[in-house]
Length: 254
Image (cartoon, rainbow, N blue to C red; front, top):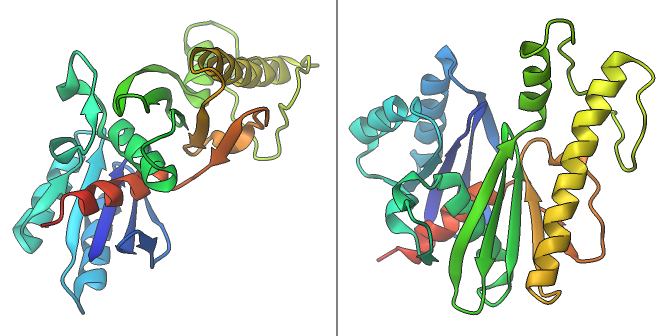
């Protein structure tokens, strides 16, 4: 089964072609909310579907995807989203508001490691999401949402009169607490260390709750800044949401 998986995120759209669970293309990334996004998605779907029938599935956390999905349906027919086809129980008071990316990320974890593990899935992107799957009754049992790295830096700039806007450099290090020697360093290290310790706190607390039986998975564009303690089973899976979209597609095939 050939599947095109699309992940409409806050800052960009990612898409890839799969043959069952195996990605057979590279990941194509398109800048979010740009003039090229609609044409870029359509162009890639045309290219990947020209020689064979494909199934189109997506996850979205943005309203701009509605226009693109509408164009896909008009040209290619059926396009399915992961929320309406979730293969596991969801323990959430407002499931209609639960982000599709969070559903897909948990599905991706299950596809990689099975139903019988407890998972903490941490997606470090525009926002940071912490989502938990409980193996004992095979249930997604909720999660939390916190500001991401760039959002925290921007808030410090916009809600003060003199603090500058700082951007994260690819070479930045935050494996241990460092004291900034300038305002820019203080802002950057303050935010990065705050996120690192926040992530570590979630891991340690949930390990206690699950009697040490916890698999931790990091994903998202900004996970690369953080080296998390290896005292537990920890994996970095950058394409987890796309993999989860495909997993849900395969669980719903006729």
